[in-house]
Length: 74
Image (cartoon, one colour):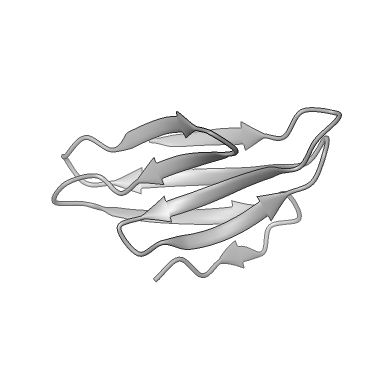
């Protein structure tokens, strides 16, 4: 499954990838694309000041910036 995470037009958005605690910032109006691979369920959890994205159990996760560059998560 692929999905897009978009920062609003006012504030940057910090995204924390778990379980490895890799953190990136998305600037206002920009986005990233996240892909979950595997049969397990992942997790998306809005927290105070950031968004946590958890890798699916028994699966894997990849992400790309809006310009197509892959984000190194692991």
